[in-house]
Length: 222
Image 1 (spheres, rainbow, N blue to C red):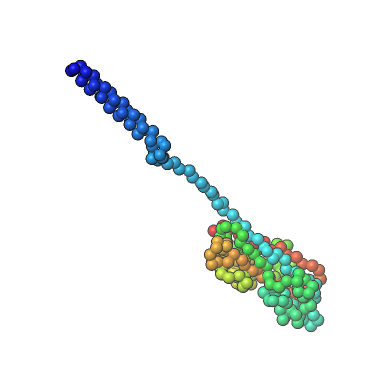
Image 2 (cartoon, rainbow, N blue to C red):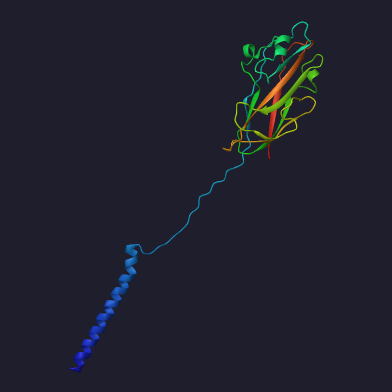
């Protein structure tokens, strides 16, 4: 009788051990099926925005067309800062940019199309060492100036150069210091567009012929 009880006890213990083992096994498996286990990992995405300095003339031609100084006049002034030919030029000469030239008014338009602020300098090529060599005659003038484009909101030149807004002879100095900081369109309040004007005085004793100057704008990252 004692042995039978002992056997029953051993059997009970064996059953308990088996049940515990099964429960332990199930506890290991359950998280795999229920998602109770958590794991994390990371990935990255990156992009580099390269510096890009680009200035572009969107209006790159000023052509006054043919004309001459009227008899009795010392000369004629052609100024792109006027809406058409200025009164002095209209009285003193026969040039008519709208009718016989490029059909435009105003000056050159220069746009900062890059993603950097730049300083701006201007120079004129093909003009020789002075206006007399380029235009000829008595006391000729060839000048340039840079101003804000009135058709654009905001300010494009936030740090004007020493020559900003005033006419300066491009024949006396090799370059015109136009703008210390020429803005780009970064989505803010600033503009990215400037207007460049030229003024030419043609004396009545200048020789006939076509005069062509190349305006060079140089932008340097600041």
